[in-house]
Image (tube, rainbow, N blue to C red; front, side, top):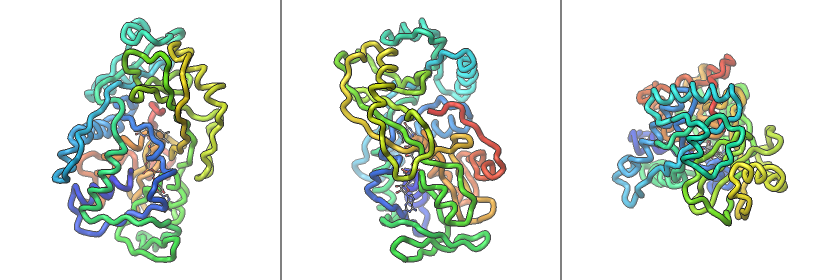
Length: 382
Ligand SMILES: Cc1cc2nc3c(=O)[nH]c(=O)nc-3n(C[C@H](O)[C@H](O)[C@H](O)COP(=O)(O)OP(=O)(O)OC[C@H]3O[C@@H](n4cnc5c(N)ncnc54)[C@H](O)[C@@H]3O)c2cc1C
């Protein structure tokens, strides 16, 4: 998603007249994070820049046809605004949610703090025992068709001249401040004016190929479950962030539930092994306690996926390395990279074409903070 957004913004949106080559080791994307995503967008972030990034996402989704014009047959997209509802049973976290509501509201987000009674009046299906408050926003917050955007980024970038090949980058040649070329698994060497590292969970490996220090980005396993309820709710279920760390939401006529595994540690890049007992032993009991109507549910699909998890501050790492003039990082998105892809592609394209960000300053997300160990913390991480 991130690489294709960069290709699309460069070639199609900004009309870059150089060549753009997207190299992916697997063009079926079977194990890419993008294929396992839950595809939601939210305005409820703790730092201003992430809110602004998601504001652009909302604009991009709603104006998708205009952005893609004159491509024919582009579908109209919308955000299914069921909203995110953060529930907390912890007084310290309640205080933080209240502070974040002020930050978000100042930026124009529709976040509201709700008492348990207010939550119950709006969503009578929850068991709110122990809950102190909730934070809810139903404006530009919910599901969007990320897979459609991904498809159109690729299709339209190709129409504008970008080329896609299936191959693996195995080496990167750099002399001092300049990256010269990448080498592929099949042996070819490709000269490059600029190299963009959009390699998801393998971002650190790619950085090391170019002679940079490893990035604090590692694959972390996340489980997604799709369930059918014998007694469906008669209204949408917001994407509810349960105090236990699991989350659940409306998914068409079914429901989607997400959870980290019992032990959240870095996985091997190709390790997607799931503990299938975790649903029965941990996730479903929590869900059925919070929403008693979900006592009777049928598990109809499950899948494992990897976050490219930034262990320092769970935020994106974007921009040029200070020791190099033509190697750009777009990595470490943790659980919010799909929604950030439009702002990232736009920012990277601007950096290449103009030497600096023009639309939205992404420099607080720069590599420098990683090198200097200065976290740019995002507190609202799912
Ligand atoms: C369960 C789950 C739920 C999520 N929910 C959301 C959500 O609701 N909202 C949201 O905004 N985000 C969500 N995310 C996060 C989001 O999906 C990711 O941040 C985003 O898809 C990352 O895109 P990417 O292009 O950086 O990485 P990827 O999709 O992983 O793509 C990286 C690509 O790089 C290729 N590659 C790697 N190394 C090499 C190499 N050496 N040579 C060639 N190719 C290489 C890989 O083959 C891969 O295709 C979720 C993620 C998961 C796992």
